[in-house]
Image 1: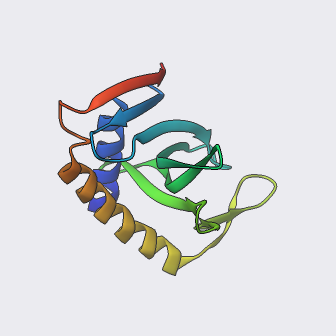
Image 2 (image 1 turned 135 degrees about the vertical axis):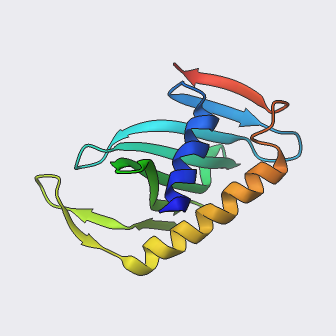
Image 3 (image 1 turned 90 degrees about the vertical axis):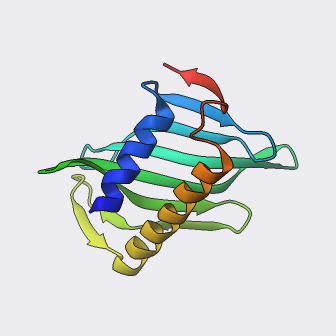
Length: 141
């Protein structure tokens, strides 16, 4: 649960009170952070993504979607989807029915995405995406 609390804190820090931002650090692919709506059960969704380009098309490399929800100790952000367009990978932790209720979970993917997100946030910190010197371009208030 501690990792999920840290994910929520990091994502809100990167967003800085806006709905979408592109963060640039010299030598690295730009990082996009964007509120993309809500899940079937009405939880806030935030995308964390590096985009590349291939034949004029934007390619997610990778994109992780985080689902925010409240717990007794505060807010958590759970990684629930992964996409990498270069590899043709689209994975989702939960399935929903027509009413928006969760019907299925893939526990092994849930663990893999948690570990990947922990590593990615550590890399983003090391690369300077959380530093005051990173260039922030607000895309949506």
